[in-house]
Image 1 (cartoon, rainbow, N blue to C red):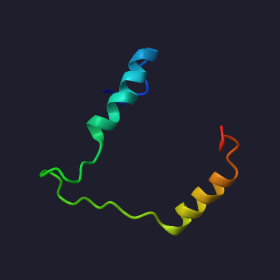
Image 2: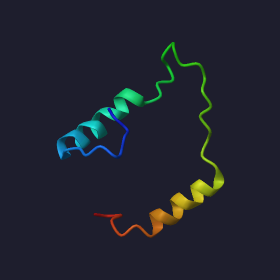
Image 3: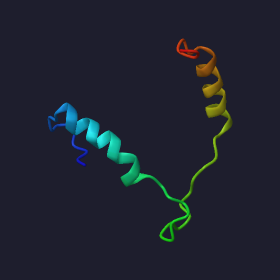
Length: 62
């Protein structure tokens, strides 16, 4: 997976990177190699932002 945005890619390459990214770069907390990186809890402003965006989402029931 390359992260250089100056390189032109095909649609299939971009889709492959999007589909493979979560399995390759996700944080697996039960893994023995996980050393307790700081994973912050959601803070109040982000909760309010989520509530506001959920209330104004035109695709809510679609």
